[in-house]
Length: 152
Figure 1 (cartoon, rainbow, N blue to C red):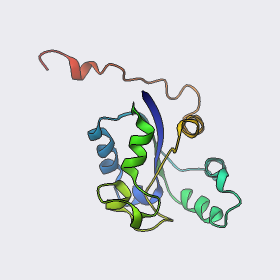
Figure 2: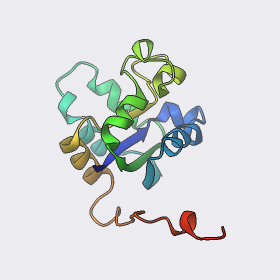
Figure 3: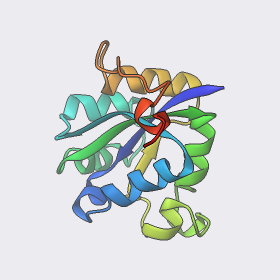
């Protein structure tokens, strides 16, 4: 089943110049990038995105981190994209993330663990609507004509 997932390359990933490497991993796996933007996140957007954690002690620091410098928001599409992306990202605690996962290979701290990925279909739908408001994800790549053209 084709799904879409939100992926955020957090400020630490952008600052460490890992955007291209992260995108490459998803594309090499066969997932398609159908939405992409680099943005400085407002406090309001960060608070709405992480509202489920609003009562937790780490919430103010998380919002401050997410608004500290630009991040990359992506919409990723493909068969079972949500589960595939979550597996590729790895465990939240980088020291528990398997080698070969993004966090297992590139992250060291929970507070700055490089990447966010939607954790389920309902979450993905809500997060994509938040980060890519109606009409901004109209792009589809059901048929990649450039890849299928005879004679190259």
